[in-house]
Length: 288
Image 1 (cartoon, helix red, strand yellow):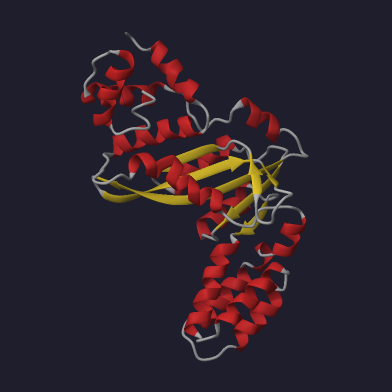
Image 2 (cartoon, one colour; image 1 turned 90 degrees about the horizontal axis):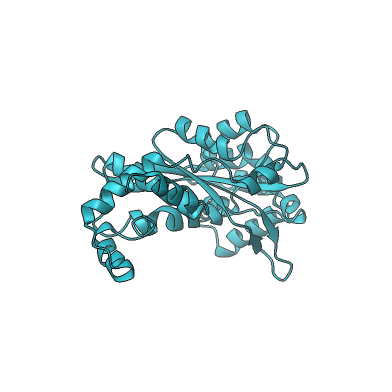
């Protein structure tokens, strides 16, 4: 079962036979995966260590959310992914953190189903300090503001840099202009950056970009975040797309049915969250 959650189905029979001397077919691997996925407990439920961490007001837990796309019988479908973890700044170098093991949530479909699962993993009423780093998507902002009103929301610095790069390109600014604005943002001079953007003339989309910076200014206090040793970028959730889903579910030529996709996503969440025991326990309960 664990092999099937990490390898394409047609590779598993040969691996099982070479390791255990047992002959199985590809269809047996698929049927077992489907059955176990239905039998296991919800891997979105937090582990005991994460529950304990959430109960302590002095603890700090990061939450990150983003969408990943997988190819299905109905075309490309979004699977929303969430990641929770602790991290401490690396004292030896800037912009590096020591991350503790992560726990994940993933759900195909609408955001309401996903957020319900995420709130099982990271309870809104828990005592810990919650820090969310996001790309600024409206649905994420609205959800966090409603469900986690006391959390700290940080706008991913590199998404902001992409906006700055767009301004530099559209307004034919020199490369040095882009670097100067990045330095100013890191120093906490968001008002100055907005004034500079406002002063630029003659490029399409200026009002939209300026509105983006002004609307998100409260989540761009990067000088304060760095002083507190906080992350300011969403790299961990970007890498989660690859490690959680894409390495198994986005290989050349792969296409998933809705049921097959949901089953594999559930097993991948259990496996990558360090909850493989959910899978083995379910197997022990199945008829021989």
